[in-house]
Amino acid sequence: MSSALTLGLDADDTLWENQARFDFAQEKLRNLLSRWADGEVVDETLLDIERNNVKRYGYGVKSFTLSSIQAAIELTQGEVNADLTRSIIENGWWIIEHPVEILSGVVETLDVLSKSYELLLITKGDPTDQYKKISSSGLSHYFKGIEVVREKDSKTYEEVLQRHKVNVEEFIMVGNSVPSDILPVLTIGGRAIHVPHHSTWKHEHIDESEIKDFIFSVAASFDQLPDILMTY
Image 1 (spheres, rainbow, N blue to C red):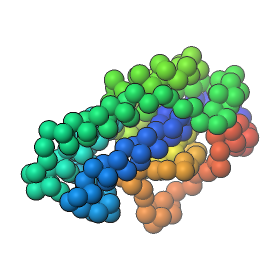
Image 2 (tube, rainbow, N blue to C red):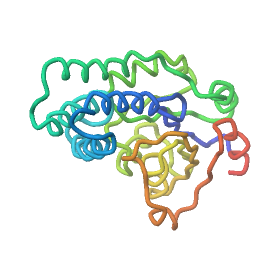
Image 3 (cartoon, helix red, strand yellow):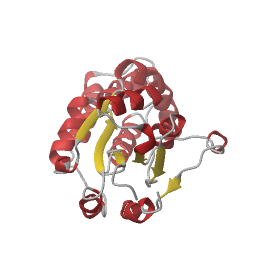
Image 4 (cartoon, rainbow, N blue to C red):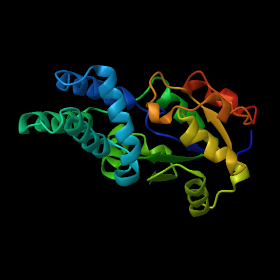
């Protein structure tokens, strides 16, 4: 272990529950639109719209809500009324207002990690929602820096590391998303540890062929990180 190492930590579904809130809201959307389409069609339509809209609105509740309204307009062939639209908007409010749920072992593990490493929180999404969760989580004091970014790609990581004067060779990213937390960092010469979550947004799924040439560690749970890092 080197004390010079800096750890980047993802937030949503790495430190606290996130996708579960969206899964619940999407189930409600399926119910709201059940008169016009079955659940699988609602899911596929919403995902296609979200993939396009992240370019316009970014990630997070705002993008999900606007995409849900667009899906409703498409699937009802324009029959969506004020009551249905209001219910979809309230669905987004429910996500925003849901209390932050810290994942098991996170606090105890951050206590350990913060004594040996510099920690950076690097998350993507709507800044208003992300900073609200960060504040509510009570975890911000563990981090020497907090970055809420629009996208997690190689260029973004390079800019973040430059801002914090961190050499990529001394950087390890930890997160639940392979395309967002793992591959971009490996591509620029850093290292990464994957901590899978029980629920992952389909937009973040990746084909196994895309990772066959990359080497990274996988932790079965967040509290395994100190032991894995001892081998670095």
